[in-house]
Length: 535
Image (cartoon, rainbow, N blue to C red):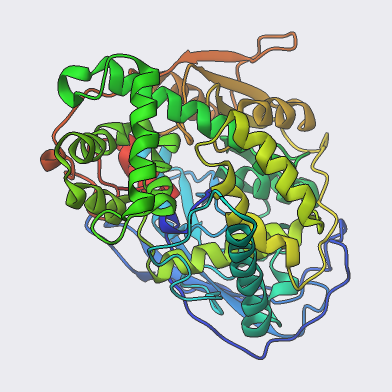
């Protein structure tokens, strides 16, 4: 799951006056298919992905009314070039709210050339996202600085943040009231089957990261006979959608923040913030207190500071850049360095506004959230006492769901024994989708194989430079080969990649121009830029 608007990549637009009203539960029985028009592909090459092509497909706004209002999804592909095709491979970067158009180019270029040539790699902007129309943007500028401190120090401060979240929910209802009842994972999964039919394929393969794992599992539940191969990387716990899953993130992100502090302490010669991890962490919280009193460069208060350092919980390749800004502020009083890091890692543009609007629309609609604010408050303070890094920030990010204007659905239960064996990847120290999610998904998808990255804390681990993981991925996509260990543990274990070394921020952008990823220029940085976590 992608957690911050500033790190969601999409393009915003608005359309009003759409048809409303769906039943208060997601149907587990797909509607009768209607013939999909054939696709027309045109070149949309980028410097990084010269073979990329683009198209659009029309899908029903309401799949229970297939002849009614239609919406448009934006598609991309890198077509197969081999004499024999293995069919479409649909790819999704997660979110909800992440744009997948460039993802097709990345996956096709990151796989071995001979294997990629066998697939039509298909990217797409899900309903409401980016170049799909209509696209959501409930409150443009919602994350503009300087926002109130996320940790309430008085009832009035808590009330102010509650009112802000409620106002966002109300604005979504007023602006996109016709679309919100249809912004849910089951509807998005049914869109995938329209894409399948438009491609003329009997079955599809699917490769999803983060929230994309849940989308893939829901598709497999609704259309098991249409699944050829299924790859799920960094798995959502399907039993916890979405309130419980978000609570689980609070402790996991705090642990990753502590890991960052330990890394900074290990490299004290570079950063001069102390050799004791606890000392470094204390310095970070002193920095937080300082920017609460006076926002750095007039732009970075405590809320913006949390947003700036959150991507380090997704991908440790950003640690050197974050540590440089941290050290410059603490050691030199350099506010501009901190403001520059905020601009790189957390500042929100229209695409981020769109991404957050879709994120809330889908998560608030997919499943029930507590309506009693007392539950939210008690759960958050309980987490904050042990895991203060982002517990309150996480709560306010999701708080529109406490007053969402559309009734929630019953989540799709993804337990499945009807699909071919799936391949799952999970890092043991993943913060956004904690390890238990991979274990649960492995149990729910009968016959699936779980490959674990031991000691890894990055979110999204295949095709990011770990050759051990990628061998399992390529073997599976080539001929369906899966590791099997027997017993109740993982089927295969790979060591995590080494932690990064301190680097200069001046030499960090090579190879990432088309993605917004700004770190080491490695494949991991490019991937994490596409997944939405970029600097």
